[in-house]
Image 1 (cartoon, one colour):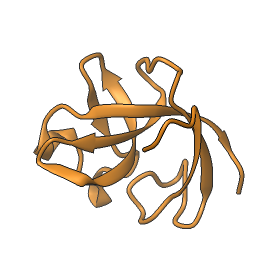
Image 2: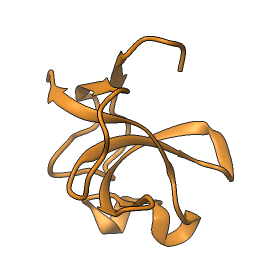
Image 3: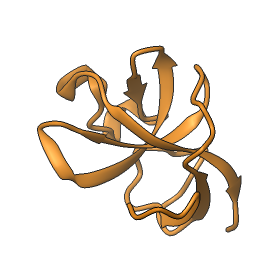
Length: 91
């Protein structure tokens, strides 16, 4: 992810609907600590090259999509590595 403290990420897919839609752009802050309820940028050890936007459910980090019918998340992949917290939705 480089050394920049912020990153713009384009949402792909329906896993965070209705909160976020495919094509939305969000601002992620790497220096902010995630807490339950936060929307975060994550990756899983089993999928190190795939980044995902999910919501924190528990410390540790157990993350889920807001749309359980269209989300692959910690229910299947286990705990995730949180890379940053969403601080703003641009569109």
